[in-house]
Every structure is written in structure tokens, then in C-alpha cells.
Picture 1 (tube, rainbow, N blue to C red):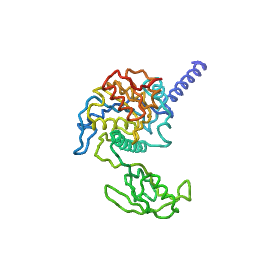
Picture 2: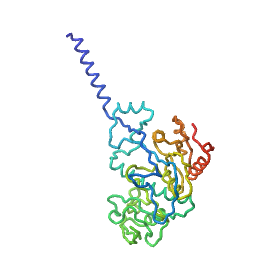
Picture 3: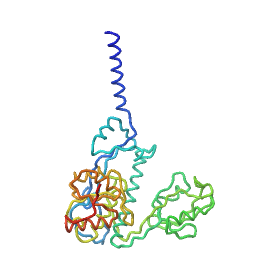
Picture 4: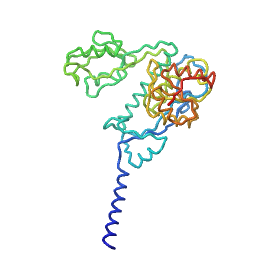
Length: 350
């Protein structure tokens, strides 16, 4: 074999090896694929997804109100170049930079914990939004959302504790809690009146200097909104999904169950969107992937947050894409379409 042939052979083998290596090297991207839909009016594991307390009057309904999901590659999953190229040419898969979905160094457990917390908050917001859409009063409370590890509050306070009093001040807002604590000198103790599992307790917590301001006192808690619900509403989705994007569909299902008549008019409706306690619908990620899952599940109407309308309209679909900015918008549109499937309702356009 001549030197030239040997040289070409070695070069070719080296090129093939290098090319193969490039294709298996990880790239800083994640994938979002269509996931399953879940009918909020239906059952899971032989149990209704939504149940209500004893004595709560509910009404029969029909049709479907499905929330949609996306299958997202996990925080610690490496996507190689070959997989990334496959996703890029697949019209139903979205390829996004990894940092769009996860913080630097975030683990699978970290991501699952954040997602579960978002789902829990979304469930509470959906209950409040549905009841308020029915003109039912839902008072808000001040509740601990998280306790910082290693902070003075750790071991004294817990997520879910309701804060009633700070020092001598009866508190009704997150801002009041922050103002009273930050007015203390770092190192002072703060007295709090809390409710835990329905029981009133008085606790004392040390303060320390805030990380961003050594003159400001902190105890290491994140405070959020809680609610005094006038009726019991249980959501049994469990850990099948995470995140806040099913909030609007949960709220619609609660509203439908607690009001006479079928909100869908018997039609198969799917949708997505976060919800605030006051009924504002927020945009989400992966709307096109959710549309694919909804259409495969048989939906003919898809409820789209206003912020996602342009993206949704760019996807070919036979579903009616209804533009919703608030829970009331969704209710009004569904009632109109239930009365007349050809009714004019706000829709998404490119």
C-alpha cells in the first residue's frame, strides 16, 4: 500500500471518528415535545380529578375541559448534536436553550421541587379564581411559601404557616410582614403569631442582616398569598404533572361543576394558561406542542392565553383557537360556543 493511500485512509478514519464524536457531544439545549391531555371533568385512577366537600352542591355536566402538557427533557439530561438536529427538523418538537428552562446547576430534584410548588400555588389560585368568578368572596391570608435553608427561621417556621401577627401588628398583607421585620435591627428577635394546621401558636425568631443590605433585618422566609376558602375543593392530579400552566383549565372545571349547565355544550375543549386569584390568564411555554397533544386527544376548541396567540396561530390546526386574557373571557366564549358552535368569539390570528 502506497504512502499516499495510507495517508488518505488515516485521514478518512480520523475524519469519521471526529465527526462521530461531534454528533455525540452534548449541546446546551433542551427539548419540548407534545404531552398527554387530562380531562379536568373526568377521573384519574377511578377517582374524579376534582372533588368537593360534604354539602357542596355540584351540577352534572358533559363534554371535556382538558388541560394540556409538554414532555420536557429533564434538567440533568444531556442532548447531543444528533438529537438536537432531529428535534430541529421535527415540526412538533421545540428545541430551546437549556437556560430558558433551568437555572445553572439545577438538578432534577431541584426542578421537580420548583415544579411541584408552582402546581400547588396554581391549584389554590384556580380555586380562588373560579369562586370569585361566581361572585363568592374568598378572603386572602398571609402565608409562608418557603423557609430558607440555614436561616434563623429554619426549624421554627414552616411552609404553609399562616402569619397573623408580627410583633404587635396584626398583618393582612405580605408588605406588612416585610415592613415590620425590616424595621428591626439585625440581631433583634421578632415575635410572630401564626396558625399551623388550624392551631394558633406564638413563636420567636432571631433576625440577621440581609444579604443585600447589612442594615436591614431578615429571618429567611418567602411570604405568599393564602386563602380562606368558604368550601372544600380538592384537586387529585397528584404528581403526574408540575408547573402552573393548568391553572385556567382547573378554574374552568371548578366553575363548571359548581354552576348549572354544561359550560362546553358537550364539546371537547382543551387549553392552557396560568391563572391569578383574580382570574387573569398568563402565557406559557410550549403552546404549539400542547396544541398537537390537544388535537390528537380529539379537541375541537383550544383556549389560548393572549400572550401566546401569535405563536399558536402560526401552527396549522383545525381547532378553533380562542383568545383569552381572563377567566371571564374563557367562560363567555365557551358559553357562546355552547349556544351556537358558529358564534363569533375572539380568536387568535397571525
